[in-house]
Image (cartoon, rainbow over all chains, first blue to last red; front, side):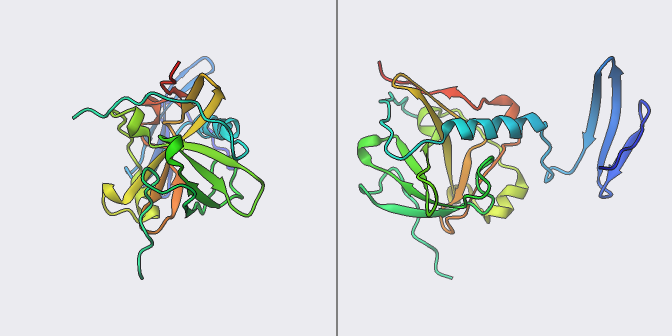
Length: 76
Length: 143
């Protein structure tokens, strides 16, 4: 892993087009600004972990009895 | 190249199957790439995404719009091009359902599975507006 030291207001540039800037440091919380093209997805890592956990919880053996759900008809 | 038959889980006859390939697998199940999308009319609005050639493993899925018409997922452009989706009607969206018990089920709206109806290639997409949605959105279960 590349480790860089940055001061408040300083940035790093990734792939000539993604700018990661230190916006604020407040105790153990660092506020980071990210400037990236719309085509580059940026998410907190927790989102991946949350979806991974959800998938593991959702995985079932085939043939599970399914609950009846009442469907809300789409608005017209 | 002749396109494959469109996937119609809502109208598929009982025991019909449609093969779907998820080249990246599902998050946490990266090694499982081949699935069959199975729909039994008696189980509407649910369908099954069943792992092929592997362990007996399945995911219950649902068309999120059927239960949540106001769902507005933003699919990142990189995923749209990965899936070769040209227009919205090319995409089949499936929410992965967790069955918590006979009276509680939830669906994942942060990471829907998006499938190209023509190529049957799919991916679990983290929507750009994931912060607006939950991984355990409750489904209205009949009492």
